[in-house]
Amino acid sequence: DARVTQTPRHKVTEMGQEVTMRCQPILGHNTVFWYRQTMMQGLELLAYFRNRAPLDDSGMPKDRFSAEMPDATLATLKIQPSEPRDSAVYFCASVQGAGYGYTFGSGTRLTVV
Amino acid sequence: QKEVEQNSGPLSVPEGAIASLNCTYSDRVSQSFFWYRQYSGKSPELIMSIYSNGDKEDGRFTAQLNKASQYVSLLIRDSQPSDSATYLCAVMADMRFGAGTRLTVKP
Image (cartoon, rainbow over the protein chains, first blue to last red):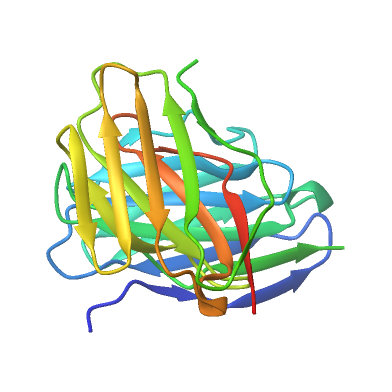
């Protein structure tokens, strides 16, 4: 079964530290998304890439979050500096094209203390 | 602001009953609609997609779409305790998800 792989699965860090989350999309999927899920806000779109080009990152706090896709097999989401309010589950998802459903990774559960 | 609204729940049904989950959306140009199931502590899993007005059936699941009313629903027949999860409606024109409806199926 093709799957989206996210690392790490869990991350506990102190406020102010840098956090990097990684995602390997399914081979052949041309669009990659980063979502954040909290109990209060549900699933929020942070950013997405199509054919490795960033198309929309309006959901991200620009001063501390950054998303990149250095190659077709790796997407990264970085938070620097991290804050307690960033504590959430961060999901990566990929899709093969318009009109198809997404496949989600297992998520990174981030706790900032 | 484009919106995807789901009935807030939580929804509780007895085993064997029909569970009905509803979703409305504001973006009239949307063409692709999806239902995801998310078990507690897990990632969302695609269970149904629908693109045309009418009903689409897959086993015990039926998705219904009415573009004129901007309404999509999911019916789960013969509900099982294993169906207990949060169900997320997704409208792919703007990649937004509803807040989800938590369903509990009681034995």
